[in-house]
Image: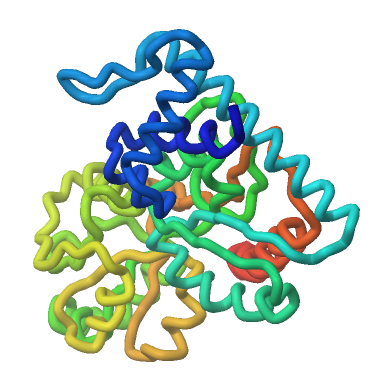
Length: 315
């Protein structure tokens, strides 16, 4: 039994598809099948049910849990030895939520890659619940997002509390408030519920985004059924629509300094439910047993420094 067979088994247990798993390792289905058969012969029992569809047997489930621990520990040892030898060579697989990743990745990555030219990076942009599974399975070093489960193996490093804002152009404000626009701006600039904007059109992120769920709670608190003129998965596209005055939209404080410079005609109102501001927290999430080599620690420090500047702006 070799480690390659173990890695093949883990991947097949996760994918439950021979074709997809073979493609993942750039090997043939025949070779993959031979490795699985080798394991089944070694343990003297089937590890997968082949029909009606591929699934783990009880023995396969036990082996999967053990193999994940073995591979994670082997990878940790390799990282530690690499640190001792000071090779400064390695790789990282990190995760980022699509909403925030589009913002921080191009601002943090270039300096890190210049400092660590021999470290290869793989970035996966997914929602936090999917990335948590990858952390638990040992397929990801850490991700920047939100811890959503109570799995005891998951640990967090807090980065910031990101305040939620309503973004609306002065043209839209003038259209709906007329001569009262300046008064409304003064009234809302330090915090507002959605009540004054009940009749506005809105640009919204789609349902799977956590920010969408937080804003939905604000609409519900004001007993408003929003007039959503556009729902979209990409925040960058939404931002580019600001000059079109199509509708108001929502973002977090992380983007506000940039947006103020690019769109001076826009107003940014901190969103509230009653007397409470709305925040979307962000953390580095990782496996408690994962070893971080020097380059990973350096990347984490760069992230802390980057997000800290926005946290100070929010206080």
